[in-house]
Length: 87
Image (cartoon, rainbow, N blue to C red; front, side, top):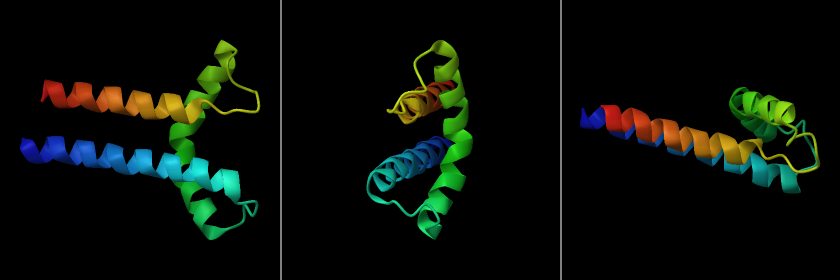
């Protein structure tokens, strides 16, 4: 059971790292055809897109600051903690 819990935590850590890397890379890189940015975008967009759509529907999104990474990271942490506590 320990290996499952640890795997869930490690997976969430990697996803959180990728989201933060995308945020930092988007601040400094202006070449969006860069292979590193394309990889980060491809890995994180399926996670961030639903949060971006939800925030837009709530009237929070659509501005110059994208809050979807914050909500995605918080949600991933809460969900992983709930799953691990159930196990």
